Image 1 (spheres, one colour):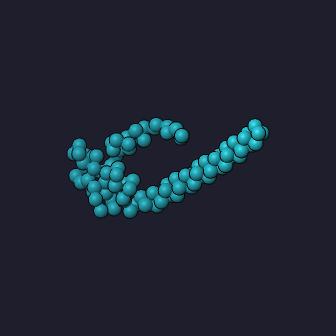
Image 2: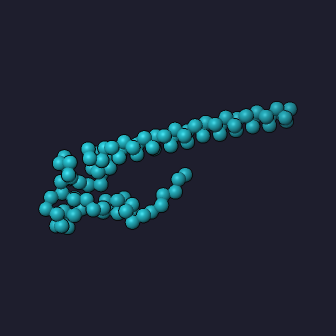
Image 3: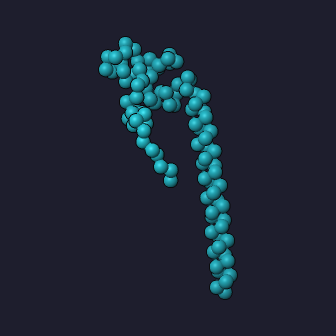
Length: 95
């Protein structure tokens, strides 16, 4: 399991309290809540999952996550194979 280190930026992003136009608009600090892409309000959900302006970073993140998951799956398969081999050796030696 990977530890997540909390930073001030992360603790504002997770609950949606980052400096988005939607958040600032709620407190009357911005006239509009629209994202710079012009498609919808700039919420954390929009920035992370939908915004065309952050698509490049989103694709890089997805690639890194997939690469890490594949490595973890590979390590699990190897570990399972090693464990099976150890069990077979143990059974053979007991006979």
